[in-house]
Length: 79
Picture 1 (cartoon, one colour):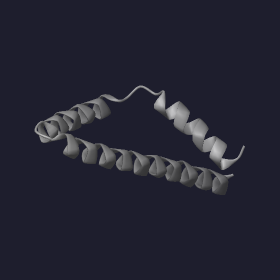
Picture 2 (cartoon, rainbow, N blue to C red):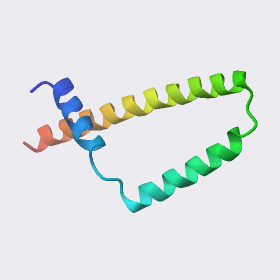
Picture 3 (cartoon, rainbow, N blue to C red):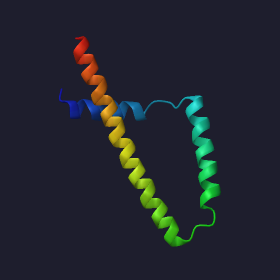
Picture 4 (cartoon, rainbow, N blue to C red):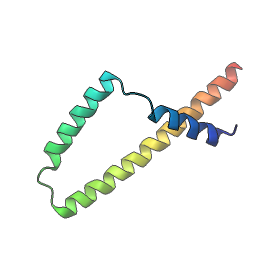
């Protein structure tokens, strides 16, 4: 199995996992802070914020792929 296929497999399985209580609490906190921060945004500011959010999401996706690749590398070293 190629690393890219394994990465996609792991990401798919990970996203299907139930969130921990700690994660859910942190997510709720972030949503509340975000709502407070963005409540008076104009249409243009919302567009800018949306683009920022997309860029952060892409970075997070890259980070997950790098973590999976790191784990694969470590596991191969132990094999």
